[in-house]
Image (cartoon, rainbow, N blue to C red; front, side):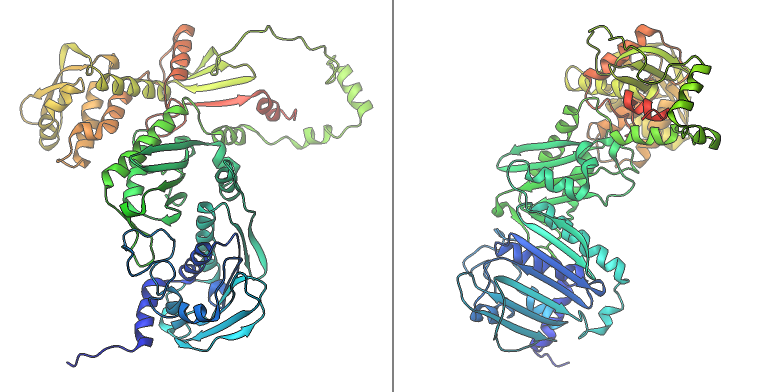
Length: 583
């Protein structure tokens, strides 16, 4: 076999396979170049899902004719020098082959006017063949047009999805870049239809405004602000309340030094921070921005710059987990407003057609109908002001429904509390506090309880006996396939011992044997708390209900149970009026 050097055209096409996976990949490279050029306004237009046309115009510093010719050469860049360390990249673009790679598989045209220059220039690259720079007309900045993407490599076209799907990927890419750069204005049109229009926003509240414009006010209203710093690494952004979770991880937006990434370390840290407040099949919603010294992170480990490598991964993970747990704890007993919205949707029945007709009666007929029933019309009753008494956030208990739900009256509405879910969270938080201080207090069972399991399950529990004892659960072997329980955590009260041991055995089967229980403390505490909580179906006194409400107000994360479900639903007076058609 003869060894030979590949042609420049072939090399460019190989590079394009790494960098330009689909139209969204090309768009990402072009927009990052615009941002690195200091652009404060970026306009994107596509046709045919990006296959027919991708156009990116910016008001950045622009290029001279000589710079334009160099920009489409492989490994030519203005963003690093030969003396720079490739592990200290401070810009978004850096690889050097993006433009020539795009030009190798499309019909590329770049038109640019250098800031302060009185002339603009244009240059075309078609299937890797570069033309000469020519005079052109352009007010300022740079315009890049990519036409017929992958025409030079038809096999790649077979892997693309339909136009709508590819346009969706482009929109998602542009939204992520816009989140990280609120100081720049963005516009996006697809086949002439405006799909995104974001004005530049600056100042202290700029990020909040940009996230609200992209993700919606609902996200901001149901998220906790995150701000933390450790050893030069800074984390900021917003983390959704656990009750505002989703069934997929699609709405997790993570950034490192302004660069959108899908990094396993960051995703794992985000997941770990919510471990004790979300079920395994639910995913948090978050927009988090990590800023670190460029020398402590390598962004050159992935062709599409989607992954990074940190010098001190443990520091970054600890910062993220700690900051998010603190932010969620600061949120206290807050629960997502979407819970109330969903409840209103379920509770509002359709009106009978005869009722709907009666609402259209003229005023005189309404007065006649009201008089017939001796009922005053709205506005004819003198309102009596309530006493000037301060009501706590979760109000005062008034009743218990089906021995399961607590009804509390607040200053302007009512609260409906799931007593088991709420107490489950309170018990878990108590266990965690005891573990952090003096250890979990234990209570001896009057009669030790024997729990029958299959031999393998019993062996898993007994193998962890010493660690379980530190958590307040004292067990020992009792023949083949049986576990004897002598003591349980005191704060569990009259716990369901059999159910607790069986659930722990199942949980240990899924747990890495190399991990200690303290490393999975949240999950173990959640399992124990579930079996020691006030059960649905237990009658509570008014004093017990009020005590539960007051403890919820003082306990972090009490707005959701250990599985991420809401512990209460709040209905304001206005919500109740809407239910009855009064608003």
